[in-house]
Image (cartoon, rainbow, N blue to C red; front, side, top):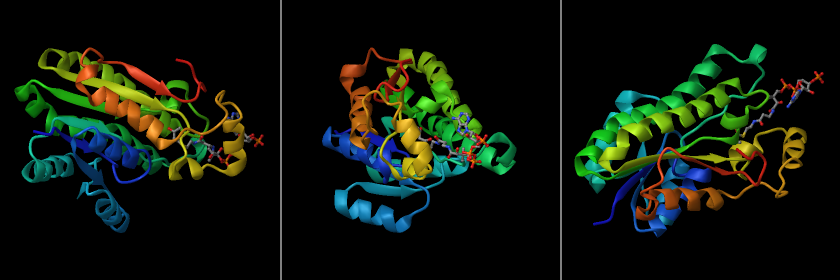
Length: 240
Ligand code: CAA
């Protein structure tokens, strides 16, 4: 029977490419989304992938969302924690809400999703978590104390949960994307972005499918001996 994977933030940007790659590799995919109903509906019609709406920053919503996926598609074997937001601004201009929303969504979402799915994977002795970190969690980024802290937290979360999951056949890994051609990166002011791109040795933004293939590999049986690791996919911008 096909394995079931949840991709949070799975209907847009990098998440959309991950949902498609995992479907191509034979998973039954549940693509979670939080906001844009119209875009999610169009995604479901175009791809045949089931979509489920909940806010990953809420523990209760994650528990209810996972339960809905399990009722519709079966037990959850893998989770790709991809949902993430930015609220960029220098520290003095950043509000407490900007801080909290980013931490609760980007990092809290990983905790909430693991809480709702880890026990089932443990019982069935197989599981995969792939957490989407960021180059900015590894290197920091001007104007992103919230995002860099959350993404850096994801890398620590990954290494800790990997130690807990190993003896149950559950691997936990992270991918640290660099600057990828998505709406999120397009929102960076053009003059700032061109300076960033100038520092990428490969000389261009990454494409979403270049992240997605890494995720699909980490979710496969072939990656069973890889756990607690971070795969940097950033065009050489930060060699870590
Ligand atoms: N290092 C040092 N100084 C910097 C700097 C940097 N990297 N960037 C800007 N500054 C300086 C500016 O030169 C300016 O100095 P002066 O006042 O002396 O001229 C000062 O800091 C203020 O800069 P801004 O005018 O840019 O400040 P702002 O408040 O208008 O904007 C900002 C701040 C919103 C953070 C803006 O700089 C910005 O959007 N930066 C990009 C942040 C970024 O890369 N976000 C990534 C989003 S995509 C993503 O996160 C995905 C992923 O995982 C990679």
